[in-house]
Image 1 (cartoon, rainbow, N blue to C red):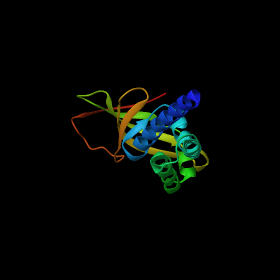
Image 2 (image 1 turned 90 degrees about the vertical axis):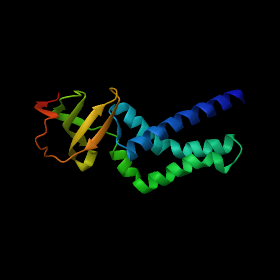
Image 3 (image 1 turned 120 degrees about the vertical axis):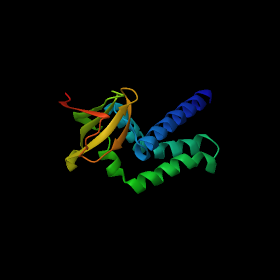
Image 4 (image 1 turned 60 degrees about the vertical axis):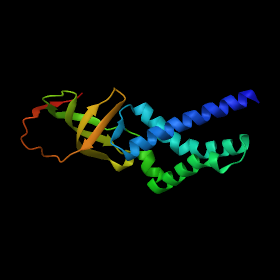
Length: 159
């Protein structure tokens, strides 16, 4: 019984962390830059939601409080669409750094592409500031930048 309780607690904590990362990635300008982490988060939302709901219902006392997060995530997956979530597991990769901020060199304007699987590639121009090697804050901007003394044009390709 004690092992089941520990497993349930660990399973729920991991699921809550996955949900937090998914919701912040999907609905804010926060982005995950690590391909493996993003794949685990998106597939965790797709494939762990129903098992978490069933496990909590069977192991814990049946209650509507236990079911709120998994049911809410099932609704979000249905609204967004499972195929869209499955095709969004790849990260945006910088192809070229177009501009660097003169005052804060960690803030850059880059051209990025993302492999959408069978749907081809998407391209965008973004202002990106890296928080760590795993996470960044991103703002999509128009592809033409006007002369601004705050930005230095570098136009260097990224490997």
